[in-house]
Length: 99
Image (cartoon, rainbow, N blue to C red; front, side, top):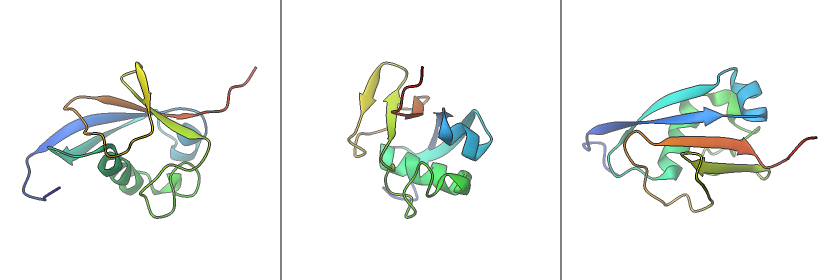
C-alpha cells in the first residue's frame, strides 16, 4: 500500500462489544485504493482507539479472539489480506451468540 494511492471509502459497522466500546454504530473510513482488510482494521483502530484491547489487538493489526469480520452481510472472512472494495460495508461482530 502506498500513500500516493487515491482514497476510497468503506464503512465499518460495529456490533456487540465493539459498538459499546466505540460508542458508535458505524465508522466511515478513507483508505487507499488497493487497501486490504488489515489496512481498514488499522484505520478503524486510529478512528476509534477505544477498540484497542477490546475488539482489536493493541497493535491495531488483528482482531482479538471472539470477533469476526463479515463483508456486506454476505460472507465471513478471516483473511485480512483480502482487498477492500470501494463502498464496501465491513461488519465487525462478536462471534458470541446470546439467547
